[in-house]
Length: 291
Image (cartoon, rainbow, N blue to C red; front, top):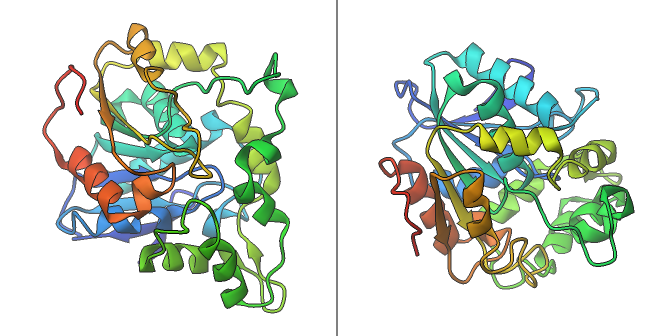
């Protein structure tokens, strides 16, 4: 069921009686249906999976975008839902938005589960600052599809089937996500994400001062799950050992390394979704590194 909570179109999963619903925040060019495989592992939990401003069924919401705007939207969603603080999950850019929410409204967040995101990314080789980064090139096919027009749903699914991340992990969850993401009418279907939103949000993933302060101020338990491969099933977003360095900012950080997944299949493949669901449902995590 998809409803409006605050301004955001939100897919609501699970029982209506679970007051302490999880909030699950998607990535930079994604939508709330990216959590479907995780949801299937914890059907007893109520899960709110919004489409962020500029994506999915919320793509009609105007800019400005940016992590602090997303945090305000998410706070309004949780205020509308009631029931106080709860576990907040975030994948990729959604993990950054979750951190921004926790910093701005700690009363709404009792725990963070960050999935391959949430900690400042290293600048690409040759880039001296954020202004030197070509976000379209960095995000690869995920960004390229925002400019594509598809004759029908099958053509859009064909794009995803050959995507390097899903070549060996196609599933009904990926298909449902891809179908939901389409807007318009055949023969001119397009991805729902607004390119300007991707660019504005992407520029904040490299650790501006306000974001480092947000991390430093977190007091709730924080778990991060790391994928060993990246967006194109190649180099990871976080090199081996990189996340450990952030314990100087977040001493309570629990790091979970998830085997044999990439940046997408940590959510979409059964082996990844099961680990994310377990982390979301576990008691307060220990502070030592998990493997």
